Image (cartoon, rainbow, N blue to C red; front, side, top):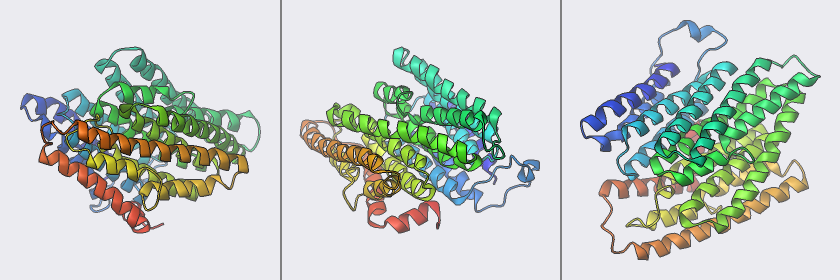
Length: 419
């Protein structure tokens, strides 16, 4: 099994599921699509792949342990999301398949053009589905901005490689374009409002494609893209992504404390993505990757629970999920944010201040979310009980996050391999 084979399974299962599951009235089995993708990604390291001409070319597809762990965590998150949500429509399953396949290609390709084209494909699939599902100003903005961000990434590859260019405008232009394109796909200010708007406008499964599939892939690509830039380009890329990331974290952390219960989690997620992106710009690659991956994995477990509308029959998993995002040890969010803080604190005292402020705001937002879930439990007392499968999936997500917090080092090694 090769990485391209895993991508083919994602796309093929999504397209086949979109065609056959609604026709056979088996839409509740849509979780089999990401489950098959999970197995395919797992088999990449177990079964030897067929030798292809691309295996020895500069654009070879290679899946390291970190990439494999992130892709498997993303697939598990989508499985949980589909179990917890109402039955998915065929178009939603198709979008998941296309975006998942694009994420595999983006994270396993060694060629910048292929990598950026894959991210553009994922962004286009999400934006077009959002426009078709809920036409309006918000979703049309998603189409314009998200696709433009992916196109900027592709355009930036025209300036690559720049590793042998140590001065002049070329490294600056290429790095600025790369930072702007990645900031767009990560939902950072001032170009990422499309992502938050889509998450607030659409229901769980449709909105979940970006946070569960596209954003994690874009974050890991951003961590790796600095390796192909010269020192001047790294500095430009770092300054841009650091500034945008910190502004995003502060603004959305503040807005999360004021948001309605149904929109609070989306802002917390974007704020944490801003912190992870800012850590990449700090220049401390090891801390940025470890903290960012750990924090995004925590969100991959919590998002299926917290993206559900408030007022579910059993609010206990939702309340615990909010507490696990509070940043108080031994919550997994604490370890992820601590590593990011450790990297950002080494930049300057000003950056340290701008890092501590959103972390405090996110703690307040999480406490408010937990209180809202407790109140929602009383309001939903007369609702019919949740299906056993949904309740089991919610508790499984919470249990996984608890295990990450209690056994942080072991959990990180289990998911992403030894470092």
